[in-house]
Length: 397
Ligand SMILES: Cc1ncc(COP(=O)(O)O)c(C=O)c1O
Image (cartoon, rainbow, N blue to C red; front, side):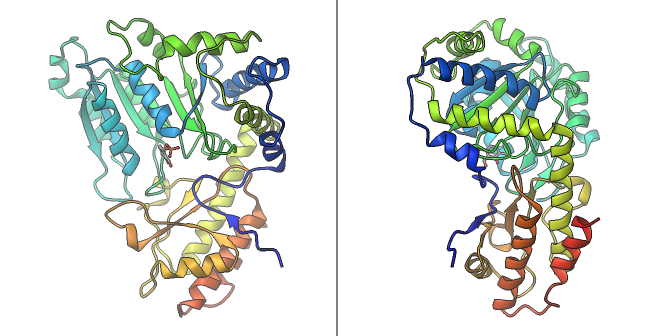
């Protein structure tokens, strides 16, 4: 009997065999020609995956939090004002990081867990006359949006929010850690100045890479800084020549690059582009609809308050009445690992299923089957197969 479990958490995800083979290749020098070529190609491919032809990509060893740190360290100067559109746990984190670099942060919070602030509320904040009394004489320097808040599975209206940010002259920064290469995001077309993610989610590479694509306005803001970047490792002054060098197929050194992770990144980006971005977004939407239909058919509510506020890379069902997280051990016994709750206000009341990257139709069906088994094991009453039928109705359409 196979004892391997299917990993359906919101990152790290399941990786393709080709990506894992790249991780296992004999490590070469970071100046070896095959590494220089792969790094250069990965940088070019990142622009295509982020749909940002005029962006400057950065690939730096670290996790998604480093990518957030890089954005804040390079774009914020002490005294700047920043607006955080907060849909959960990771909005709080971005606010804390921005404050660490001296920003004065205003947060527009969701009215309830599982909700997102309305565009009108964000516009009201952007218009606030008090923002005109800034040291610089301008409004918000930047605004951050969490594309998918991984604690709540709330998906933000990034396109609408980015348009607003632009209208009011704020740099638009998108935390796409649980989104990029899964959720639809068109960085350049939607006016996003900086988008960031980490390797272990929909990008499909083991944890360890912070990925950032900065558009021309973000790079100009960085170049016009009056104060030095207050973080040595995150400073683009050090990293820009490295990225430009590798893209020109020349090696440059600042910090030793994670050779195998970058090989794996290049393989995964190639697979993503072979699928095509539109097809990839559509696949994520369909698999998400199938899982969500199953959850509803099984009588479970979800944390996001409505379908238009829901992510496609992640599903967050509340446990049904009388069921608690003990059920998750049975889901695991049935072969699938899902994640527990994360948002402190509701942590014990829900669980999370990640479905991004190379996830397939059969992964969704296996997950629904394991959830049904888990529910049955803890005595929840339902018609066995009702979740599977709801998922199949969408998958076979
Ligand atoms: C939306 C979001 N932002 C930031 C992070 C932080 O990324 P990391 O855990 O790789 O530091 C996560 C992690 O799950 C996330 O989901």
